[in-house]
Length: 56
Image (cartoon, helix red, strand yellow):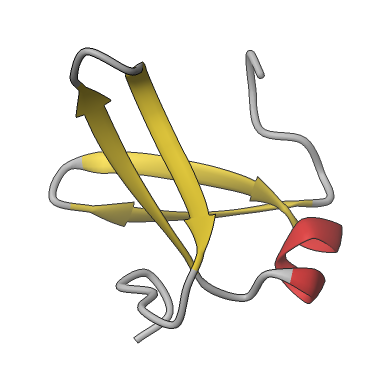
């Protein structure tokens, strides 16, 4: 994604701005983002969860 679109929602947490499509947020109102770096995989790991620091 290069810029926020009209149907996107955004929030900021610890100085990092997150942008997500509103349709995705209907299905996954909370998700966790983590960076993984081990012998099996390296990169961002995004999973549905119940902790959403952008939504209170």
